[in-house]
Image (cartoon, rainbow, N blue to C red; front, side):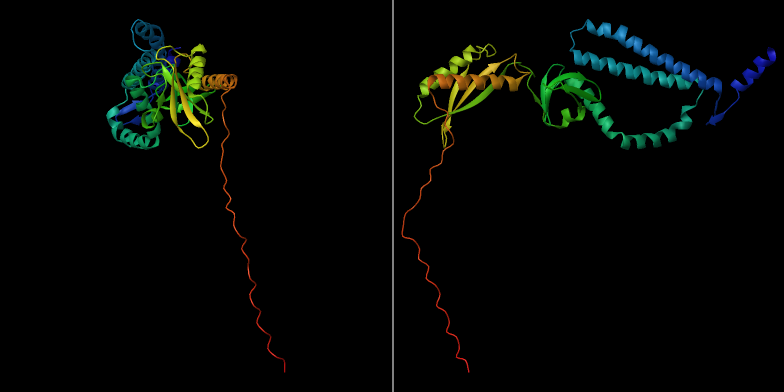
Length: 299
């Protein structure tokens, strides 16, 4: 038994290779792997059961709490990785040049990932968007469901999850329907025929706005006379809503249905585009044939 233990100790501590002045052995590799796995498990337990409970008692926004959890977790893992290498007896000073070269290569290869990571930190710190906001960016429109350090998940009205890189929320123009004041104004254009009773039209539009349960009383609905169009008098109905911000298309559809029904009941015509064609009369143009050249006499 003693011979077996002596042999096992010999092979476990036999240097496999050298990193600078450090000897790498099976014991060191095993210690490194076990310690690293233990740090990952402890980090996850600390983040989920301790840090999450502490942040839940604060008044911080949900997205900001999530960002703090992730950042603290990454810091624990990086610090644990560094301590694990030191505990394994590896001399980090000998890896400085190699680490620098690898860092430059990773910097070029992972610049998009790093850009999204930094953008995620900016989003979580400045909070231009938050979980539950209705946003539009580069043709993507929906509700923010999750904000991570690399990307943001946006769920459309069709229940489709779209993963948007965080850098787009920093470098692109973003429409946030829910930022600050949750109330949003919708403007519905209407065109009526020339000669229509504009006062009756205004009363009809305001009445249908008041009948809609999703339209707010304050600020009150308003009707604006925009211009004299080519084929119609152009008006605009402006209404404010709060609970239909997440379904703007459905809200516009409900209003358009109501406008069409109310205008038909009131006898107000929505005209087709019209064009006037004027034909000038005159004498027909007579085209004179060209004179034919005489043929030369034959010999």
